[in-house]
Every structure is written in C-alpha cells, then in structure tokens.
Image (tube, rainbow, N blue to C red; front, side, top):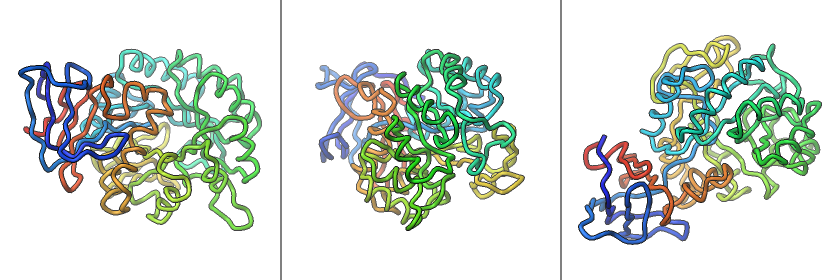
Length: 384
C-alpha cells in the first residue's frame, strides 16, 4: 500500500464530475481531501487513457473476503470492509440478516463501534420484519411483524448509526414502523414483501423511500395486479436498489428500471455475502447454510438465491460495457445517489473540492486499476 502524499495531482484522465465528464482533467488531492488547486512541488500522477470516478458507495452489503457482517468478529468485519475497498467501495453500510432480537441488538453494538470510528457508514437491518411469503435467504422461524417498539429497540442499540430498515410494510405494524423511522431520519425500505400496489403506495405515502433490491423477493409485475414494482418505479420519492450481477436481474429488467425511474433514482448495490472477493464453497448466512458455485450463492436447503458475490467494480463494468448505460449515469447510481440517501453527500459521492479524496481509477475498458480513500492509495494505479 503506497503512502499518502502531501499534495498529489492526478492528471490526464477523463474525470467524471457532477456537471459532466472532463477530458484531460485533473483531480488535486491534499492530505485527505480534494482541493481546488495544487501546491507548489505537488507530485503528478499521469493517468492518461484512464477514467477517474468517485469512490463507490454500497448501502446494502452483508460481507466479503470470507467474513460476515452479521456474525463475524470485529477483525473479520474489517477484513470484509478491506475486501470491498480493494474493489472500489470506499463507503460501505453493513447489512444484517434475520436473527433473534437479542442477537441483533448485540450485533448493532459491535457494528456501531465501527461506524463511530469511521470504518462503516452505518447499519442496515434486513429482517426480521419481513414477509414469510418472500423470505428469500432468511430463516422463517425468526421472522416477526414490524412492531414499532422492536424497531425502536434496534435503533437504540445502534446508537444513532442505523441508516436503513427493510420492512414488509403490509404486515401488522408496518405503516407505523415506517412513520417511526421517517421521524428519526432512518430510511424505511420496502422489501421481502408480498404487498399489493395499493399497500405499497400507502407505505410510500407514510415515508418509505427505498426499494430493497427491486424485483427480487417481491411479487412480479402484473398487468391486472401491478404489485409493488409498479408503485416503486413510478414514485419520484423512491430510490430503487438494483443488483447488477447477471444473476439477480435480466438485462431488460435493469434497463426498465433505468428507463422508468431514471438514473437519479437508481442505487447499484451488491447485497454481497461472505464469498464476495473470496471464492466458491460453503458459507453461513445468519443461521442458514449457503453453497456458492460458479460465483452464485444459493441456500443449501431450498436453493433460493442467498445474496450475491458481487463487488461494485464488477457492477460498474457490467453497467457500462454490457448494459450500455452512460458512464455519468452509472456514477450517479453507484456513488452520488447512495451517498445522498445515507446523508453523507457533503463528504463523499462526487469529486468536488472539500470532499474526501475517495476515488476509483479505471482503464479504458473500465477495469479497476486504482482506489484511493481519504487521500491514501489502497491500490496504487502505478503499482497495481
């Protein structure tokens, strides 16, 4: 890992800014920040033929590098964080899976410390407040209705670091829980749901603002019963998560979401589990056994998809090269939008003076070549 320079100029690259792409652009880094001008004697790094984009922001991630955010030790969680940083994710939220309430409060205490010391951007509780009809890779025996008192218990255990809860808002207590979360500035996400179109509209009106991995773990789009997908896509207040790994979504479904919601309402996520950046084999996702084969994670019992092995550099590469989404739109979906949702856009999510020097260097084929976080190279593009 290369050290931090006092002042560094990244020159010659295509730099993606909120206002557009600058050819032969430059980014000036001083200490941990992006600045407007270079100091005398600044080191220059020639990145001709490359792209420089903001560091990726993953708001839905269960682990990586062989480590689980749901059950791992602090050192194991840090291993998972490092793994995703090496793939360009400089800001990351740790997602849990369904478990006993006491266990989840204990995990909240562990993960909140890592938020407080700056390693994580927050905690996302995916379960236990989800539908048994759409449970996916969650233990049905541990599912519960979204009781606002229990939602509040997890919020309190997280000590202000809870960023998002995924809820089946059609269940008893769902709407009340959405209102509670909205009142406290925590994202209420609709997911693992069996809701109708009308029930989904009610939840959005109550304050839900995110669709947890749109299309997955919810009823399909029907022409007489449009279900949650239509409600989530059509409402400007909702950002839709998409897992672009080639397994969770058909390319046409991804294109439909971008076309109908627009890039400003898409958040590309990984929904990664332990095997991300690690390899095939047997894993645990909460209490459930998972088999990863050819990079696809499925439950040993039932064969449901169990998260992904995706990293965001792969999601970026697929979006641009396979799905043909404009680079600026992908940057918006993979950096700016999640940063805004998490309330950290003042610090990360775009390449602007005053923000953290979090950035990713890609070659002309959009393969990751460098990662910088807070001014320090995690992967030096000149070394690899």
